Amino acid sequence: MMTDKGNIAIIGGGAAGLAAAVFAAESGGRPFIVEKNDRVGKKLRITGKGRCNVTNNSDVNTHIANILTNPRFMYGPLSNFTPADTMAFFERLGVPLKTERGQRVFPVSDNANDIVGALKNHLDRLGVPIIRAVVDKILVQYDGEPKVIGISTNSGDFSADAVILAAGGLSYPLTGSTGDGYRMAEEVGHTIIQPTASLVPLECEEKYVRELMGLSLRNVRLSVFDSKGRDIYSEQGEMLFTHFGVSGPLVLTASGFMKELPAKKYKLSVDLKPGLSEEELDRRVQGDFSKYSNKDFTNSLGDLLPLKLIPVIIRLSGIDPRKKVNLITKAERMKLVELIRNFPVTAVRKRPIDEAIITSGGVSVREISPKTMESKKVSGLYFAGEVIDVDACTGGFNLQIAFSTAYAAAMAAVERCFEIG
Image (cartoon, rainbow, N blue to C red):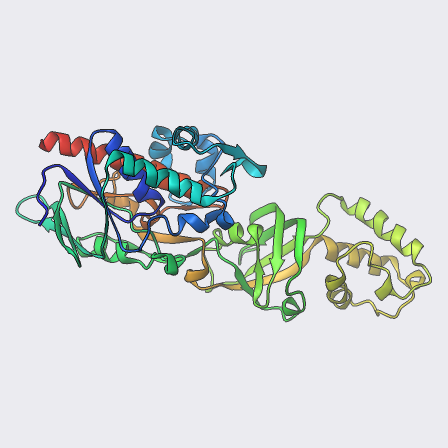
């Protein structure tokens, strides 16, 4: 067993683990990372479609408002390491950043490898060891107050006065997020909130969804209604129809609000023309009807709707596709207007968790100190990142959670090691 005093073992070389190692080393700690993959930052390299949305350039309250699970828990960590701190941190490491629509922050290069590379290179400069091994369990001494004494791996045991568990969740398992952290935490007495998919595509029950496969909609408004008819989400942006249902940025974020799936269904309503009021849309339809007054109804919507969507809209409208436009009644026209403003889709289940961007669930926050990320069950055990039962909307909020919790855990772990001396 490696027995150097003051070691901080960090389990996982993802966003939270890498950041925690930097924070600990810069503060005089002696961290080392244990990572089972052949290289660190595997999941981080594919986030944001390979561009890496490192944070959201907004204040703490905005971040709290975008956290879907246990937002109050994150107020302290986010206040102590803010989105502005994250931006300053990466620019200090030599990665220029830019802010795009929705206050999303990316490297100027649009290359996630630059983020991983900056972290890895800085760890090399700081002399932080990265050990390639599979962690089997966290070693705990139960003589008196339970406290960590190290970790056990397939390459041997390593002693540590502090352990930061940053092993990720269950999303993107090919990157190494296979739920090992949940098992390790549970083995030392922690409660695991059932992990479920969050920020994931949705399967829908309507057969016409398959007809629309491949159709991408921009600048539409998606609204979601729960089983009691309450509007739980409404946002404007982009979405995509697939062979199983719907996906795209709007849908991924909306999925995080759908806690009742698959027990209960959710009604989705797509406003295809959110920039127009009902009256304005009606005038637009009347204008097209006037233009194509002698045409069949099926040939009158090409200026208004995507080609692939027209047959489905016509079928749902109940209007005979061969009916001449000049014979369409006001009631039929208004039904068409309403359909364009409220195109219906029913979500029946989420796609599998291995297709999710983030995992909801994990180590219960009731058993973690929000100030230090230290376990309330085992002294010297800290948590960071997706392994904790906290998740947020898309837009850089989840990576900010990783960095803020990593900072809190690293600072507390270093302080503990100094006190132990």
